[in-house]
Image (cartoon, rainbow over all chains, first blue to last red; front, side):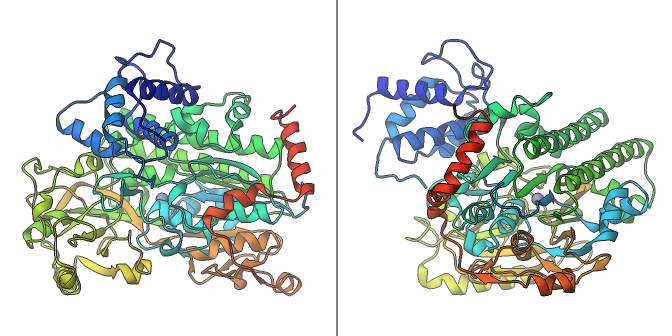
Length: 99
Length: 534
Ligand SMILES: [Zn+2]
């Protein structure tokens, strides 16, 4: 898989959310500024599972826990879809196989 | 049903222990269980090392020890050698589950609320895993549309059967009386919802093997062990504690009714097993092992680590999330990575770390650490703190991902990974922790009546389930069918047979679906009946 640009990553995240969110109580439009916890109502464990769906899509692993730990250390308690896009863009490297 | 073998019911009671169940049976709070035990066999059931939920249930599901099935803990490293953690999943599972094995033997199964069963593995039957939040439960079920079917059950509550991580963590950190009451009631309701799901499936599309884990009592015993074991509450209780105790007894009575209902589903010809993944017992102290490792010169805290007043002493996502930053990795040789494994990891340069000891120092350092731990004495009682210690080779057959040392503590407690000024501190209140001895009870036409067996091992559960289904026991199963539980006539008519080995985990998903045409036709018919296909 060639490296996707940020618009493609955003669309991939939207498509993944679309796929997994059938039971979620959220109906607003999702934009790059949507917060995962505050707006979508996710818990941190849900975000990790969402990350695992993205790993499946990209067929590579991403250091999601490390990232969330880093955020928590900086007392950042929420993240936007655009933060997730930046994170995936930064760590995109298909040789990191899914474990 | 393709095969007319009578149904088998496996009732999993997470953390069930005779030290609590026996007094409840005697005092009339669990009359059905008392009758069940009198009509069948019972034994203590020795758990895995260490006795924790995911490896132990996985052993029940695979007939294999953790060294072989590969599930060692609640957590796994995010990447090889990483100190950052994620929950274990079927992707780490190295062995075929009994659900897949049953599928290959033309049997259907419903496995409900078992840990480690997500993402789902296709089977001939139904799978709804435990430890999954409600937002992701739909995609963790098999078949894929199962959630839509379940939503047709009157009163079905997706949020209740799912795992609520936030709630469980909050309660472990301590709770007020009103919270305690609603939390206990929540667990009664949650167990009842799971029973309802199994009742529904058994009416809709009966399976040969039904298996359900009810996890309430593990959660309740962690917090309220002291109110449930007469050895503790016999010494007198406050009025507030008496009230909580009475709510707890009401829960166990409700649980007794649920067990009766589940046993009824198996029918008079069926066999019923009641098993736990581990036992339970009291723990009065918190043992800060990473702080000890610091004192011994193996570990260095980062400046982000602050001393904790008290650890919840259990699986807290918060503790795990922050853990990676608590240590100064450059100056750490040995550390405990998870709050649930009692396992020490040794950093070896070029192997699992950029820092740490040289490979040639490994044996010496590990032996030295082992001796130091075995020499540790409890500050209040003078007794030995570490009562058992296993190397990676001894406990896990040398498995790379396993801890270098795994400990058993004098009180069977789990260590804390956090920083503390004292190594061993009394807890504010006595907590419940996992003890190695769980419960095994069985009843059915081939089972002897009113017999107490010698202790069994958790490896014996999977073979027993397969025997009840008239199947041979795969030759790679590490336990066996306890023949002393079977009526001699039944055993003579149906001797225990050993069969071909199970298949690896990779093959199981593919093979489960690769059935001969007759089976496929039958499954299609069933799926049509369920409205999955037009
Ligand atoms: Zn358990």
